[in-house]
Image (cartoon, rainbow, N blue to C red; front, side):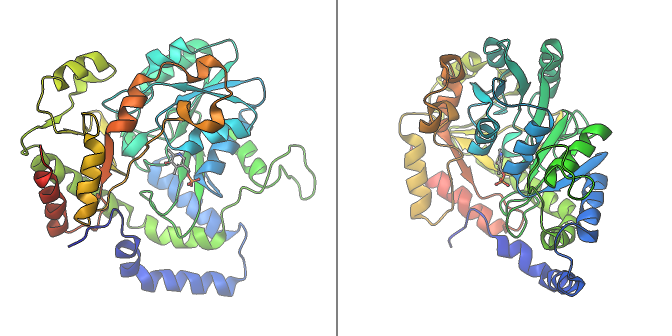
Amino acid sequence: MPVPLLDVNAQNLPIEAELKDVFHKVLHSGRFILGEEVDAFERECAAELGMKHAISISSGTDALIIALMALGIGPGDEVLCPSFTFFATAGSISRTGATPVFCDVCPVCFGIDVASAKAKLTPKTKAIIPVHLYGQSSDMDSIAAFAAEHGLEVIEDIAQSFGATYKGRTCGGIGRIGCFSFFPSKNLGGFGDGGMVTTQDDALAEKLLRLRNHGMHPRYYHSLVGGNFRMDALQCALLRVKLRHIKDYAAGRARNADYYLSRISEIPGAVQASESDCCCPEQQAARISEGGVRFILPVAYGHNGHVWNQFTLRVPGEGRRDALRACLAEKGIGCEIYYPVPMHRQECFAGLPAHALDACPVSDLLASEVISIPVYPELTTAQLDEVIAALVSFPN
Ligand SMILES: *Cc1c(COP(=O)(O)O)cnc(C)c1O
């Protein structure tokens, strides 16, 4: 039985009737840009996440761009971000005219390593973008302390982690601006592109709102150069339906992750990285090189509410990860490498200054070791068992 990496129909078709109703409602309203559905979606998202302001945006990428624009970041500025992330984090910085400076990451939680960020600080550094990768928060206390010490803005890239928490606080509301995505594979997955910015700051919210709509206020008067960063009313209406189910979706992902953690850890050679290894690659490497390690399981830290956008294993050893990928593919088990090439090795960034590109050994290692397996909420136990059986069958 093949198991796909993601099955959007398994989530969307059970609510088809509700989705058709809201499509009908928006069609007949004749209102497709901004308006009631957009306002309601933003209000409901803000309430769900406990944010003061939630502003819908055309995509997660545009959310990052508008966040940087609102904070006045552009040519001549440097912005710190992890090298091990999806391209949008880095591309958005470049598109404002600023320079992305790539930092290494923690091999356990996959978040930006503040020690690496410190080493790359220059007088031009204006902001840091922690990415809450795979559903788990970055180390926000260390990041906030570092940012405060050096007067940096903090923009959270929370595209993969809708609903994640850090020490009881909701991610996206810890830094100055949180940037969300509703790309279909995200935890609140839409029907096309969509995104959102969140902030607790009234003046900043006002500026973001204005930038979203060409910097216009009042109509046809432009005090700022903004753009068209609006999310469709139809998309907002459809996502309002899915937002009502977000707790169930989150519970499904958590259930599947727990099942994997308990069952995969029984496979000989499977180890779980330990919290104490965080930001200590040497300690972790020493433990792993003890030998016989086939899989390194992901860890949800006790102080983090992990929302499991991805369930990502590490497979140490030259060529081993690619061998596992081939083994899973042969059995029809969906898997993907998020991400095979870290940002400091991307061709388009080859011309950046040396400090933006150097010294990211953990990012290099992870790019060669990670593999994500299906964890979407609608997986059945039989499907989970199928994935686990494929892992068991992977030759040592
Ligand atoms: C998906 C993603 C984005 C971009 O979101 P889009 O809505 O696809 O533009 C940005 N950052 C990260 C880490 C992502 O995973």
